[in-house]
Length: 100
Image (cartoon, rainbow, N blue to C red; front, top):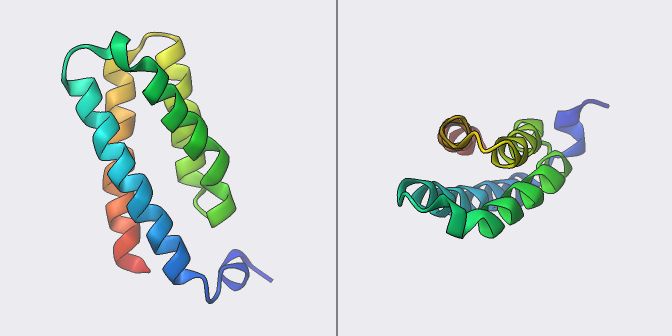
């Protein structure tokens, strides 16, 4: 049994999950772009924690990895790199949604 077999019949739930993460990610990206990151760190950390814990559960390891990278980037105050991770994540989610 491969990963495709495990998630067979769950396409709708997985797509809904991706759309939800996409919406949240767009909000987080906006927080980064408003220039006041320090005020938004709790929300950004919560987002990163949520996706690092849930991505693999839906078969999206790339989301889990992005969540870990976002957490690390925020912890190390590497905000520009973290914004790029978020932007790349959003692109990948949009591409993935099209395949479901």
